[in-house]
Image 1 (cartoon, rainbow, N blue to C red):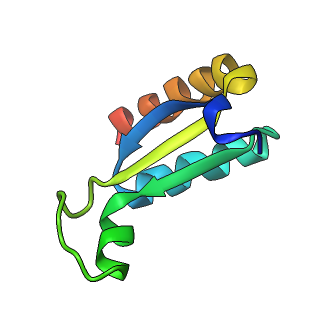
Image 2 (image 1 turned 90 degrees about the vertical axis):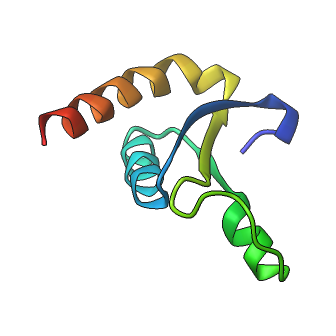
Length: 81
């Protein structure tokens, strides 16, 4: 994974959806980083945020366009359910 400043926000949603999307990206050789403020706060003894909607997914700038295409595919699969 590149330096943190090279990361670009891709998607925010439930931890389950973010994890599924991350797996789809990995299957296409795209590295990503999940940031979950809710879990981080709880681990530190603080509460806050909306439960279930705290996970954010980031990818490198160079992979962003390819990741967006996979994100569109992911969103379409959710809409079909």
